[in-house]
Length: 623
Image 1: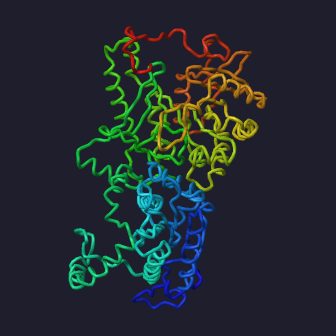
Image 2 (image 1 turned 30 degrees about the vertical axis):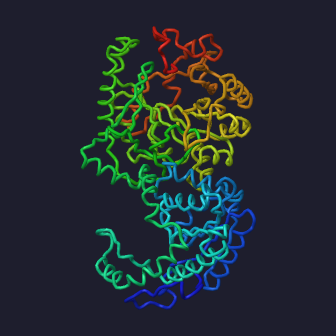
Image 3 (image 1 turned 120 degrees about the vertical axis):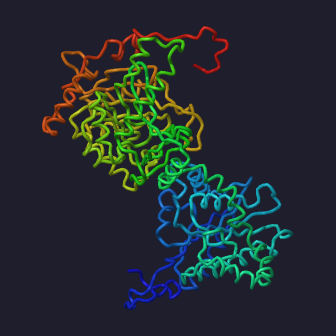
């Protein structure tokens, strides 16, 4: 039970006979005043405002923004019933002060990052007051404007319009920055008092059609008080510089390009009404004939699966939402695989007659043999993932599933797959948080539990390590400890692939290790793993693979997969109701010599040849 703070914080429950302890409803639990100050002015204002709030009997906490981690704490404000006030100064060249720099950087990234979703801060209430100098015309109060905009883009609710203080006494609306703040403070305290009583913001009489039940009444009241309103408008405009209407056009444009996963159901309904079909999309790699299945809007190519991480090297820059659970409509597994196979064949047919495409490979590509489930986020979140895997196996399609090690129970309940990967992008809690940027607060425990769950599997298991230079290449001992935890069959180590500039990632080509650097890392790692040895290499992919010694039979590696044998084993497993189990050793195949680490081919199949364009001078593709 919440201790009483002030009668202003509660509202009686009507038409109910309740005890004094239960007849109150909390509307405002307190206020957090966060300040970003360089010379101390904003800090002084924060303390002054806190005094006025406390005088109303409302708890208030003053926080230096450098001590407030938005990544860990901001989302909590959505349900805390707190009100957050931001008092921020604009520093040199329109930049935030040093103490507010990280907060602003994180908030800007979150507002533009599709994976947070536009309703990330829904439920949070806030107010902003900025300190600036209008002498600097191009940078006047830009920090407060940006914070206000970014919070709004994430669906936080303004309790009042933004205020601005001007250090230029010539242009200051009240004669000084102090007077500007005091005028704004007076209005804020009045608004806070109303909120604490549970009062809603008065209707302006300009309600949109259907948005207000009392539209007619409010319009009449607005007309009756028109003269009074006009009298106060000039003073209000002097105190406040922004409104919902002022910034809504620009911000709605920004927000409209992002789809939150909670809205995907509505999006899909709108697509159906517009007769836009949502179809699975397949990409075939002709060397191995692998079909990668994606749920994609046929016209906009909008992926519809989410992930619980926001990895810095993620190449899905523009459309994928993030989430910790499945909360939207979905297609059944049967529909996905049926349309996926159909679209796969249709796309392959488009390559008929293309220079460099061998006829026999073209015919072979029409039949899907392998399916990689990883390209659209976290496939293990899909509620019908086991049904989907069984359908793949019934059509003699092998399954390669990748998970980001945040769903241990789902890993345990997963039916056998041909090969199960867990992404191990970092080896310590701090570096994992920095690189994968997980959403779960208990991400590290989930990560460790996922590795343990992987160790319980009998079929082929893989740790997939992505090396990011200057981020995670110096954690050898910690990696070795994690490998001991899950005892995977294989450890795939690959240099990060640079996918271009993106607001979702700060990586550059400088973070991509050379193949020789990857080799050196793997050699050092192998020295710490007595049960593993470097088995395979693929230079073109900047990738090496370590394998457990059990796959080295009579001095020869058996790391390849006997796919026909796997299909026989999985069929027997299903027919027995899961009682007839099998292991990775039951469907292993001998590794070809050209794929062995140290071979002259360095992973290139000598039976394959590259297609060279005849007119290289006109080749601008970079290929």
